[in-house]
Amino acid sequence: MNVTRITVLTVPDCPNADVVRERITAALEGHEAEVDLIEVSGEEEAARWGMTGSPTVLLDGVDPFAVTGAPASVSCRLYRDEEGRAEGAPSVEALRQALTKVAECCADDVLDPIGRAGRGRRAPADRGLRAVHQAVLRHFAATGSAPSTADLEAVAAEAGRPAGDILEELDREDFLTLDADGGVLAAYPFSAVATRHRVRLGNGVEMWSMCAIDALGIAAMLGQDVLVASSDPVDERPVTIAFTGGAPRWEPPSAVVFVGRRAEPGPAAAVCCDALNFFADRSTAEAWARQHPEINGRITGQVEAVAIGASTFGPLLTED
Image (cartoon, rainbow, N blue to C red; front, top):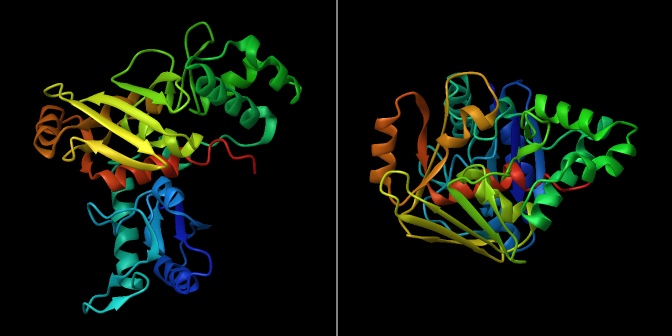
């Protein structure tokens, strides 16, 4: 199995937390995977994570048991087993099937919306990488634009390295993208140049995001209200998502997201970002997919798309 990260979202003292972890262990059948248990205590936090009841299981950021249209919730969640009985956690068999499906998907390189072969977008703490990476993200959030190398020298000096060297390493590891002169061109989820996806933060700062999933992850990363303004690449109909208190409101309500990538190696900016788009409805997403046979992927619903964005970008500015 190629699943690298399993996240279990629960409310504090959830009676099914131990049950779901035991069943995940059984479903893994000895395969290794990182399993994180995260306690969610409020509706806003639940919305940021894409949690629709306790427990919610995310496999590499995706809820395989998601029900389209289900609202964020900190109430108990029920699952149906193979015989239709209601239980407080997915059955071992249901988890095994979900893990297998994700593994097959990864094996075919169908979905890797966060890039880095599923390793996540949070830079490691050593060699000044995380400190500089977070400084870049905070500069984007504060100003709407990329920092200069000089803006980062003080942070880099704490690690005893020039900022340019750290930026080059972050570029090689695909945490950000540099231009030919060594300047920051993009730092997922932000872009220094115009894209289809415009983002306005609750504090009034505006910037561009690299792709649809990146745009959806900004509210969780910054803990702010966010307005995402994009458009359907087929017929140019506007698509907006307004995050208020962590809860998204989509317009039009029929909007979906196509999540995909090209079946070739390379940084996410080259192989993923233009393959992750908002569509006003499923019909235009299907039409776009037919027009781009070189892109592997699938249409995702709103809950799943928000969950991917939150899981990918929510942890980027945490300190631990």
